[in-house]
Image (cartoon, rainbow, N blue to C red; front, side):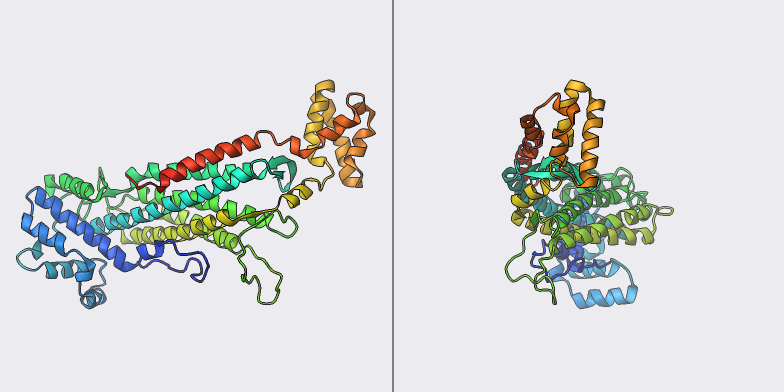
Length: 458
């Protein structure tokens, strides 16, 4: 099944990371041919087919040697996923070796294993992309580790934080997704050669060692039970991509929100000449964030589809294979689009500390109510202090009065602290906890992971 190549507009200024090309039919065919070559070589090692035949098959299992017109005609005539490609490979190999092509295998053995080769290529791109994102996040967290911003819970000011802490949260989640991608690899990248019903009937006792040989030649593991009804490892991959997309979507939504005119605290890269609207010249729209949010929703929506594809009937069912193939290609293409845009945003995100400071002061010190309560609580008890500060805070909010003035006029409070102490307690830059420390720790972790992800996969 051909992948949807238009997950996000190709006219975007962000370059295609290369996932679409991986899921072009010609690249998938080459991956299937690579499996046919590995099958022949593994069988020759065990004396199942002649060594000369394996060499001939391996030497000619290259798509550029094939007659595309013959293949297309075969597909049109048979409606079969693989047979015309096998016919064409056998024709090119020629006599006396062509008859050994595809010996003892069934279609899904070849296509599923081959598609996992494609998926491994996609994972390599994801690793590189996540490394780029983490590297950019490290720089961003480092320069904003001490930059105060209003911490918000339930959409309201909570306590002060720093922007670098916010980035450290993103880093922390992404690092766990890197772990998940690493941990799934031995379960995911496995060769399958069980034959028509996964029973090894066609190869008998030679089946498991041939399957193991294919895996070794491809750098894969080998399925313990090569059932065509097994799909949990394929669904797990899409679940992980769904988790990754959810994190990226959350980041995109956060930047989208903080970029709103009323917030104005950050802005995604808006290069000169970017047009936000055909009719409103002033618009500087969060296009990259919108792309991420949209594509992330698509990937998350594919998770239940992948789980549905696990419900294969009996020993095989093409219905669920088609569902899983479609979910995988769409999820991978969308994930590549998401990560390319996230890297662009992280590299070029503009932060505005003046707007952050102005927004911190919107409540006239209300964001520091907890600090005042805890300081007063040391003298009169936490609950009594909560009542005192609560009265002032609610009056300030509802009646539009000065929070600091109300505190200064309350004898229950001034009996224990002077005006200078109150003023210091209302300074939001003094109450960011360990935000800067966590941000700088995130910098170190992100840079270490980025260096590892940039290294060639072992």
